[in-house]
Length: 203
Image 1 (cartoon, rainbow, N blue to C red):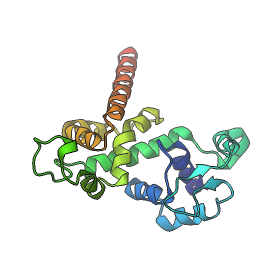
Image 2 (cartoon, rainbow, N blue to C red):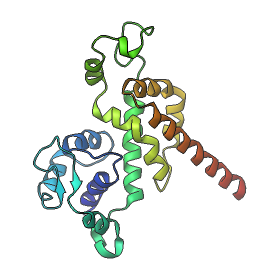
Image 3 (cartoon, rainbow, N blue to C red):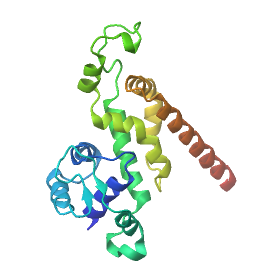
Image 4 (cartoon, one colour):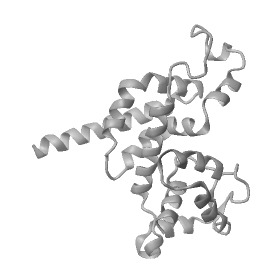
């Protein structure tokens, strides 16, 4: 039952709809869920989720009532999905990915003096060097972190800001999504203000 609720939580709380292929690429990084277990659970969800028949199509609840049922502990009982716990799982997955995979000059460009639009074959280089899992993590790690119930990932956050921040901006620029970086930084700053205010108040 725990595997079922954990998997459905990842699907429902993902920052964008995930195909089963994309979902597995994320799960492999920081959860105990195995590929065959994920596929065996999804196999029986065709009446409730779209995208089951094709692993490249996004997984979505066919009816809003199914999502509402899973998120309501009184209605779903042991099948209940904890949204905060799912965000915690997605935050851990995403931080694991950005801290391991981000690197200098990730697309191995010959020069940094050309604008992105002037670089030959840049779309192909992006597809080759920035897999979906890294694109997702770069777009969503702070969104999930800010909604997680507990914050045991502080060391990972510190490591990210010390060692990976510029590489993160590089990827966001390459995938033309710098605006999500601004949104995520604001969320982290807000969380830090609340955290340190609470700490000062308790002291």
